[in-house]
Amino acid sequence: MALAMTTVGLRVFTLALYLHLFSAIHGAKDDRIDIADVSGRYVELQCPRGDHRVDPDWTKDDLSIFVSKAHTESRLFHLHSGNLLLVDTKESDSGTYTCTRVNGESKHNDVDIQNSALEDVCGIQTLAPIRSRIFGGEGSRKGEWPWMAMIRRMDTGEICGGSLMNHYWVVTSALCVHSFSLTPGNTKVHLGKINRQVGESGEVVVDVEKIVVYPEYDRQTIDGDVALIRLKTIVQFNEAISPICLPPVKTAEKMIEDRKAGWATGWGRTESHPFSSDLRKVKLKVTRQSTCVSSHDEHLITSNMFCADSDNYGRDTCRGDGGGPFVRQIGTRWYLLGIISWGLDCASTKPSVFTRVDKFHDWIKEVQRSAFSCHDASPTETTVGEIITSPISSDECGWIDNGKSTPDNWPWMVQIVRQNSRYAYPSMCNGVLINKSWIVSLASCLQVWIPDQLKVKFTDLASPQDNAREYTVERTQVHPDYNELTRENDVVLLKLVESVEHTDSIKPACLLQPNISADELENEAQGFVTGVGNVHSLEQPIDDTVQTIPFAVNTTESCNRIFYGGVTESMFCAKTTSATDDACGGFRGSPMVTQISGRWFALGLVSWGHMCGVYPVVFSKLHTYHEWMAGVVSEP
Image 1 (cartoon, helix red, strand yellow):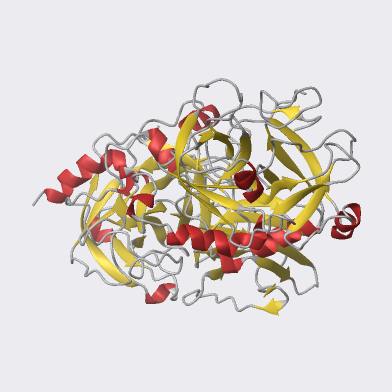
Image 2: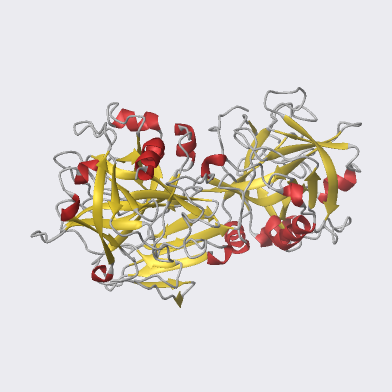
């Protein structure tokens, strides 16, 4: 998508920011892409480029789906490019979405939504892997497999592998539990560990509260080889410790059926030692199920099992690796497909056997549900989203449809226009309602206009623009330290002549508290810009329909590398995460909002930028003006 340059470096954006971060869209070959994410967020589904005036046809799993332009009763809506935005994602949204243009060109989106409350941390490697010299495998380093657990019987030193699934639960092998007679009293779980023999910085050792073996586990055939370990204390996630993702069942089936390679990890026997001192990894390829069965003709291979082996002879899982994970990557995330179960001689011609985790998803969820108690809650939530009542914060702020987060209505969104304008596009600036009488917008947009020349339109995104509610302006207050050259302190407050009544269509956005650090802001790194403007170029006419564009906050360091130190403490920058759309012309003053604990918070207003579609956009950081805004609003 093309980005154009403005003469004063201004860009107008509308951002609607969704918390937790990012929707991972991973390009694949030809006309098919993989999209993997967790529930409760959004994904953008790709469509071939074509005439934006003609809506493409969309199907899910070959069945037609209805996408409303108004998007008032759906979680699906069209972007300007023809792409589809699916919000508030659920596990049931997983499937193959196909977009077909009028010319017959199509693109397939394989969507995998994991039902998760782990706040976007599962399956992420925190450090890049390194090569070094499981049996014939390679060494690993801290952060490469942060979900890896070492399960140790304390009196005998026997160990098994396991995988951390969340703050309290580890999944492992029932064979391991029975073979070593593991009990809560004799077992500890080590997390964040690489070297088996010594204590390490960042390592956490956790007592076990209980062990649950799959009730239909068969000790003779090793069918149903799965067990869950409940930890006694909560595990805090960090760079060395984080959970693995469990893919939806259909996704797991597809990942096993395509027989691509994954990785197994463990501290088991190597070529020269009964156990490895350091955590090792081996790359193994899933075999055909028929090959798995024929290779183990003297043993029963059930539908709860699959096999994997190496293309290179001499690489395999071995004794001591049991219970460990077999994982595969989609995009930047890793998913648990199997549990190391059993095999014959290490690195033999017969492939190793793994438990199919997807066959036990329902049982895993049920065990965790039945054991759930009040102390199972995730670690205390950050106070980033805390609401403190003030002249510019109230308990009514940031709610959409009684808390339901859908992009069909941003009730704090306003357009500020010049009355009796002679221009074809009289909209001058966007803004945000912060209480019943006050709007915050850009000083660079409005400083030269007197209140009598302005009117405010509360825009219902599902309704035509000419049906928007209009209010007159009593007075404006530009920040006293606004610098027109640097765009420092680029904010203005507008007081309405008539206070508005809060309804489902009109209510204020929340503002972050003034003590939020840059690091905390960057943690709230995803959402949307919304507004009336052009999503491709400043040179094109402004579209009079409201656009919604996903954005992500950049780090301050990266912003200043791009803008040569021009991003000050009262600013931040963010870049579109859409494959085709950006906020180009007509978006000045548009809010970037993010959702925290159900509420929507305005992080900033689009202030300036360069080359639409190439560089990030710079925003006025609203919470830095909290004290000034509260003072102005409190004046009689």
